Length: 439
Ligand SMILES: Nc1nc2c(c(=O)[nH]1)N[C@H]1C(S)=C(S)[C@@H](COP(=O)(O)O)O[C@H]1N2
Ligand SMILES: [Mo]
Image (cartoon, rainbow, N blue to C red; front, side):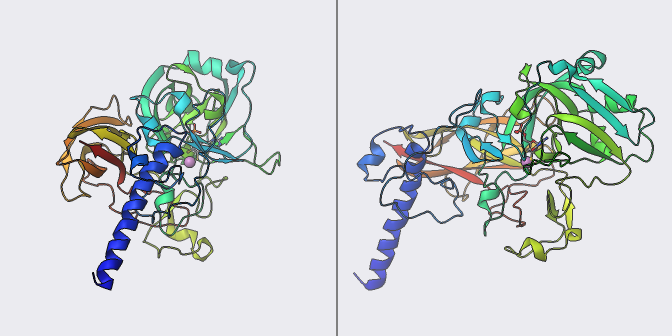
């Protein structure tokens, strides 16, 4: 064997080991749900709990000498211990793809994104007050109890997704919480249309933007500083799906997800959906609160060189994100599952911002060939579309299964992370799960 042959044989073995390592990492790393002894039989090191194990773009980490402990179970009242915390202060928690397998995401599995010091649930939620003021002829103060009884109550199942979801796949790394794919959920939200309430306040013609103020405090503890105070164009506030909500899946909205009452602007970055809402001011200018300035929640108008420091970028060359990109996930089987037989039964979800999911395709050969899935109808606009597919595998072995959604405008998910930006917003590159098929 020549030296070059030896080298390539060696690197192939290394690659195979890393791939299987990724499988093992997920199988035993996340709370030890070991599915079978087959990987151990293959001599795969267990428990390399890489948070980025699902990233095909990131180089796989070399096998660890000693298996690190599995991440501690997430411990929060009402939340599933299988959620993965990205940080405690502020608290940010994501949902592994295999835990997004329910048609409607239960509150217990719904991700958490906070910026500051979170308020507690008041003793009497219905006494919670919301002020509508600013560019209106009739400023209002309304309690949650009045909201419930005065306006038509509506329920829609809609996706809420953090603009930084998928951030961890950017190369070079973008700054912020390293969300993999779990900064998203799709729940049934009950509330009233924001426009019904705003119309009672009689917006002036000069009102072009909302400004949201909430009960959470800035991490600094400074009393007047908002943890997050974003807004949306008035047209979005007047959209029939823009809501003030107090219930999630028919239950009172959990405090950590904004209870007793929050805004919900589906299709927009999650940050617009202010939790613990206390005041909605209408403004004659684009709001400039916390999370509206600099490069926050903005994307480059023209592509920037990956790795450009934020300090070197003029915010005027970036635009506020108003539409989330099309995405899909495989929610079953879990990444790293071993199955037997000659078919892989897949389940997943696909969703979009302001546009609609038109089709989803899956591939087991790295995108050489694709086949369509069975796509369920959305219940309403902004709902995700659940899908299933039964994929035949030609032979036992190792497979990476990918899904790719395409929207009504013909836009699809990117092959690799694209439109790099320092804060890592807007990533929607094709994801995959690894599956080991035994005879
Ligand atoms: N008051 C307040 N509202 C907020 C936030 C916050 O930190 N404070 N985070 C926002 C962001 S960035 C997102 S993605 C969503 C997350 O909602 P969730 O925690 O219910 O999943 O809430 C938004 N609303
Ligand atoms: Mo977010």
